[in-house]
Image 1 (spheres, rainbow, N blue to C red):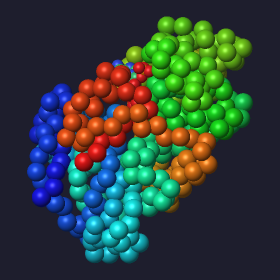
Image 2 (image 1 turned 90 degrees about the vertical axis):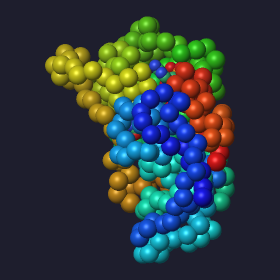
Image 3 (image 1 turned 135 degrees about the vertical axis):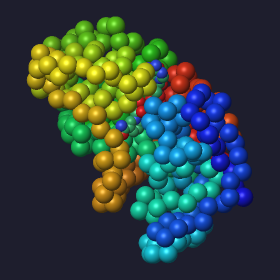
Image 4 (image 1 turned 30 degrees about the horizontal axis):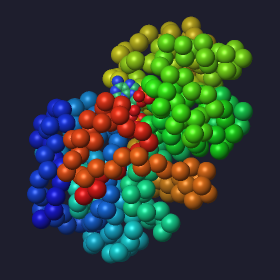
Length: 323
Ligand code: NDP
């Protein structure tokens, strides 16, 4: 047997149960892995609460982990027992052992330990596609990054600075502002009430070509007002709740704006894209330009406490759960 956190119904952190499960065997095209570390992500909250629909119940939530291959299923030729691997974007993460399609895995470079691997795959690959494909950030751009001291946020700040952009990080406290500035944010704004005027001041009135907004409901309208004409609103998360339906005419009135609601799944659906995005992430981490900050570690069985901390905005950087 092995252990997993499962939910039998949607709800608060208390619906997560630490249970025995049969140790999964790999099916055709799959491998089994013993997980050394599991990543905590906001999407885990969405699946727990029901904002994202569970494909089945009971459900092992969690989308990210790192560990060692223990067995390979029929047809798997590029992985073998003992390989160090990591993944993001495959439900079933909150477990000591799991089976997973082999094409979801990437080999973890020797220089990256399991905890860092589990912390970086989902948030780091998200930062990669947001900065390189959703909008190709370039030297001299002034960009707005919400939740700048969070998991994705700290990676976005460091990577955008490395590219040569000026980062305006938005956070909820002075402590988080300090952390964001120590990790690449050139300017920080605490709260949303003076965000538009601050972006105006910092950009000399030009406003931002792109806003990375992971907050959703509470910030959507303010974020649109931070954009330059023809700017791109990247609404990539909903930590405060989903954005309600709105009038498309607003985009015209505010300067022919573009709007996208991207997801990592689309940007890494093709194996070639997964390889490119993960290689780019490993490279920027190996170079030292981006440091993955695992600022909280919990035992996997205490996942409820980790969710409470994440939802109450008490975490910074990345969080790892250890089986
Ligand atoms: P974070 O570490 O960023 O935690 C969420 C942060 O959101 C909080 O720390 C808080 O920062 C901010 N926040 C603002 N309002 C609220 C609220 N009402 N409740 C809770 N938090 C709030 O999490 P992650 O790095 O895991 O994820 C960041 C975001 O990116 C999430 O929205 C997630 O869904 C999204 N995401 C999207 C992906 C995609 O491909 N589309 C992939 C990965 C993540 P502060 O206190 O500074 O305001």
